[in-house]
Image (tube, rainbow, N blue to C red; front, side):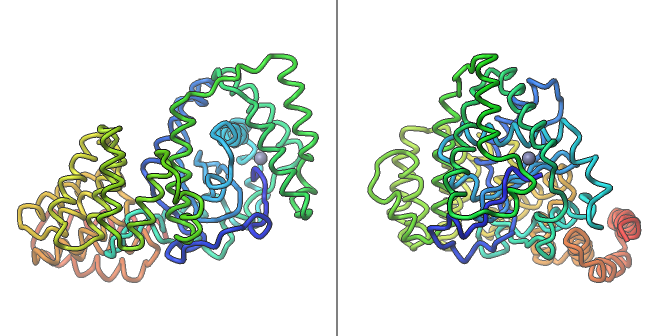
Length: 435
Ligand SMILES: [Zn+2]
């Protein structure tokens, strides 16, 4: 199922930032936006109306996999190690090929007692603790259950892999995009594979076979050679953001410290902020904003750094994040950060605004655990104890702590507020259904 499984040790030249646990899901609106844009184009070429949801998993190995729920999981190692966006596009087209081919569905019955649904349950149960009160806005710090999630729940046959490759080529052609990235990916695999022979080779077609197949496709219907310029540059930016956040600061600095390109400036801003050199970090962001004044993700990053740099900056943080939300109104993770900044600023009117924003988020995304967690804090502060209990019950239910969910729901049910009681009833039914 996996695009490939290269063990991290083979290519791990940097050590990771300990703040980000292996296997946790990270939320990054900017990376999500690029990958979603690519997938929308690929799906449209296949006349598919819905676009898979994207999750990024902190894992330095190069991997991506699709699930039968129509989600695609991307290891951060894939983004950090691929050389260009054309390769990422090819990987996504391949994963989409597994979804379109129904490989995952067909496989499901054979899986080793772990259904895809339960794995996704685990993942979403987790995709939560963004910022966790500490302000680590990029991270949702949840581990995948038992390491089972990624590895075990499917491994495709050679036939499926060939089908997914063929489908990827057709998709890329129909989307008017170059397929040459696929050849570059396989050549890259071959290069890193030269050091060892991971078990995956037994079930996968060899890289040589896959390269040959793509060369043949291109012979039959010539490659367009096209890749949107904005994807090319945005990929570099996202790669820089991931490396600057996920690797040790000194390693990231080695790579980006001296350069003046926009991706290097972004990386420098993150590294400086990580080192507590806030003034210098803000100077980098000001320079980037001067050239790209309507970029929501620059405002997001600015607001995040301000939020992390201490209480004195909380008002400024609210301003930057408000602007980010205006520029990217659909990005839930930015709105969540905005709500957090409003809450941190401490003024009564901002706390009310934070609550309103969080209510909108949970209406759109009922399983947004972090939004529920922030609501617990706000309701407690407002001394609305039944609402706080209800929010905590929702949070506990999503993160899999049924015992806590049940006890908090029971406490909230004693409320004299009918609206709260009604919501408790719905939650209690949901807890029972899940059990
Ligand atoms: Zn595959």
